[in-house]
Length: 541
Image (cartoon, rainbow, N blue to C red):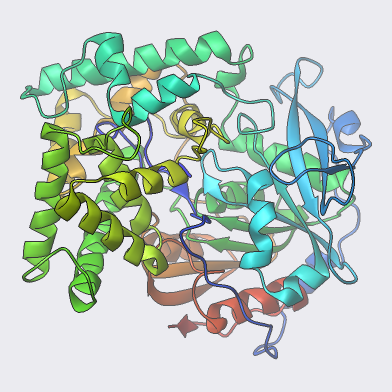
């Protein structure tokens, strides 16, 4: 899972749901329906064959060749595989469908019972791998859902096993995540060096230019200009048709809600049963999104500290304010002198420590791991647990390789989705607002627009409301204590959509389905399985 775009100093926090070994709650079985299915949902699930966009007939009618594949890869299995894999061809540029093509990777888990259709899933990001996500659905989707749907995870264009962005070697990724690669590459000052606004902005520009050069050198030609969400949504419609579905049944988390809502805006007649969990407000600029996340993560940190102080073996003391200050002091210690770990070549730097803290704040059920890691680092001068947590969320394997490219893809996708807004003066004002909203993390979250301006691949996307007029009802799920996609964003999307129902979970952490309670899982399952929306205003937890 990605945590930050590029280095923390000029980052957008990635919008990826964390399904990792540090903890997951399983869903319960479906309960009886609680409301009457709207006629629009029924019409959508009974729709005639969807219209094929002119010029794309060959893509929509292509034969998909599924083959048994190994867990953890798209490689063909020797036998006994639980998954099938396939690739679909799509245009690199939809304005030139007869031009260059790219491949989109899919992995399918067959329904354990009689399938009623195909459920497409996306974990977020941008840059999250649905191919990897589908291998974990047994742990958090309900048995009823798994009996009834073939579940298909896909890697969006630029991501993972699809035609992918490639920028850094594994060693360079290690150095970049540790916060040292940019210093040696462009001569940037260390994070704790005093620098005025002009010097800091020059550092951001130099880093973006360095990163772009790396990506241009290793990524297929022209791909960096065509990894926007609109193109990814058009790919998803090709996948829908290629697997033989007349309408799209979809469950998207976090950034996956933006992908799903974009699809619904482009192809409203093709929307079947769609669930968007941990939604993004599509009207937000990059600066507004980052400010919301800064506030969200600061509140999540305070909630964690309160929980830690009430439990056992907490390395913090005093009240919440005191505990938060101790974490800030600890992070500063790592900036001044990285803490040793079990790997003598990889001490716990500031950047890695901050990534570990942010990552665990995505999952309240894993807060005890953060407590363990902080206790080890603060009292034993050993950063091993926190390093392992940071590596888990970055998809770094034990052998030093990376199983995904989310750390690289997020830069390119975000910069095509978010038009540059502002100038040097407004970006400095934005940085000050971020520090006010989040004294712990805000200083490391600024200059997103400056980064994208220096990146060099210009966005043409307008940040506007999404209404999806004519689409079947869409179920939006929001979590009140979500740090990465604040609850207000789910409220905003549900209000914008012409036909939507909002489910609220009173809880902490990022997203709800699969890690909350039976109330949420029942609401989602009832809609996906029977087309039955929950009662208006349903609040769980």
